[in-house]
Each structure stands twice: as C-alpha cells, then as structure tokens.
Amino acid sequence: MIDINKLESSCGSAVCAYRGKGVCNSTVKDYCPMYTIYKPVYFVEKEFQKCNPPCSMKNVHPALLKLLDDLRREAGIPIVLSCVYRSRQHDLDHGRSGNSAHTLGLGVDILCRTTANRFKIIAAAIKLGVDRIGIGTTFIHIDIGDSDILPSNVLWVYDSNGKAL
Image (cartoon, rainbow, N blue to C red; front, side, top):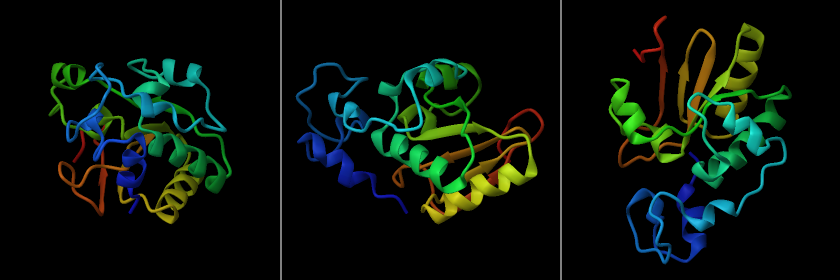
C-alpha cells in the first residue's frame, strides 16, 4: 500500500488540509502549496488539461504524480491520462457519490485499448503497491485511495456505460 501520510506531513501540517483533516497556513482551501513538491518526469501540465473534465497538475496529489511516473517507468509504455481530478460537484452532477478518489486528487483513469497494454499497466500498478484498480473497456482506473473513505485491496470492472460494478 502507498503511504500518502508521509508526503502529506511534509508541508508542515499534521495531516493534509487539502483533504480536510488538519490545520494548514494556506487560506485557499481547494489548493495546497505543498502540491508543487513533486515535479513529474514523464508528464506535463498540458496532459492534465486534456482530461475530461480538464484539470491541472495542482489538483493532483504529489504522491499520485510520482506514482504515474513510476507506473510509466515500470510498465515501459506511454501512459495517456483520460481523467484525473474531478470536482465533487462534477461527480454529483453525473450521478456519482462525490467522494471518489478523483475528487480528492488521488485517482486517475488511463486510456488503454489493448489487452497487452492493459496487462502491463495492471501488473506494474500491483508491483508498485496500488491496491485499488478498476478495469474498463477503454481505460484503467488506479488510485491511492484514502482508507477512511475508500476500501483497500479491491479490483472492480465497469459496464459499457462506465459504471463501476
């Protein structure tokens, strides 16, 4: 399992205020300055703006950014992002719970259209300690979750409409 608490405490607060569990000096509640700590090797800001809905690297937890780099290196193939961060309101507007890993900046959907690449991405994710994986027909969801909200050690599939089963 990936320990995001180690990274969260690096900003000086006891627990990351971005996720609503601590005290932070930042006055902007939906962006924390510590999110600039990790600069990805394989990804650039423009790739996050192409996601649906578009987002920014600053919306993504640095541990997930590092995981994406590690995943790219381990899988040995390009990683194309289709969805990373979604606001809670966007999730609610689309019939979701509003509490997904995407709304916390902890989840990502990766475009994947071949069985060989699907295997490489999933095998690499498991090797790297990812314990939350969803498999769709054209994408793979991975996240580093939050055990207080989302269960660990789960694998799920999506139906043809993209709904998790």
